[in-house]
Amino acid sequence: MYANKTMAKLRAGQTAVGFSMSFQCPEMVEVLGALGFDYVTFDLEHEPYDERDIVNSIRAAEVYGLTPIVRAPYDPDLFLRLLDAGAQGIHVPRVNTAEDAKRVVEAVRFHPQGTRTFYTTGRGGHYGIGVSEAEFAEASNRETLLVLQVEEVEGIRNLTQVLAVPGIDAIQFGPKDLRQSMGFPDPTKVWQVIEEALRTTTDAGKWASMVAWMGADPNSGKMARYRELGVRMITGQSPEFVIAGAQQFLRQAAAGKAPPAAR
Image (cartoon, rainbow, N blue to C red; front, top):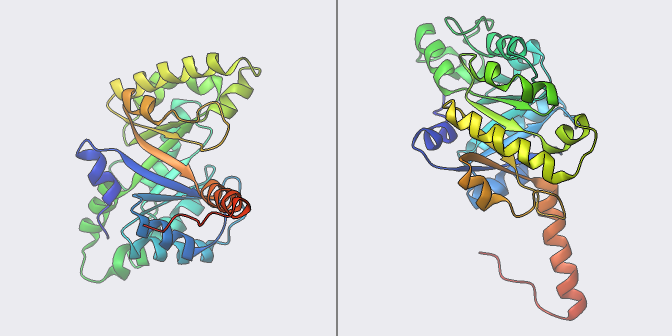
């Protein structure tokens, strides 16, 4: 299987920058890959995706060395099919307990870390060509990035126990759902909780992950702060890239100015 370039970067102590795709467009994946992003997350939690479409988007990611990650609610059968199709990461939202985390690890990892159904002849395993079963299992456990998302009060309360589960690579925090589960307090209170949770995550030796919105949002412009807190995975939202670029173009067109040259 392919080496996971995002994990290699994270293991080297660097920051990985990715984007979340909320619509099916392999060409957009290629464009953002050409721009130099490290990973792409296909959002199957909020958006309708056809599984075969995801495979084509995974192929597009591979062209530019992007790490293809799938975000989806806990579903071992879905995880299995997409990993066998070439996904190099699984991102599971709404993890609230150590038991939740253990179930995800078991579904994603091979023995001795988990109980993922063994299958070596999918495209994720080079169709079984030129690699032994033992090599494939070891490489898959080593190169598959597992991200758990904690986004509710219960998950924050149980964070230390979740972090103690072997086989987890990274934790992403969701400020919007967390704020909702807290009863919609002032956003500053939510960010106090998240900053403490980020410190707990990095102290436990796990990579911390956050989304950075470009628009008018409570965490706009927080990327510098993220770095200070040890966040090593920063994700942008693909629709925002299109919206921001289109709005800039419309403003410049209305003012009679030429748009900036592509770099």
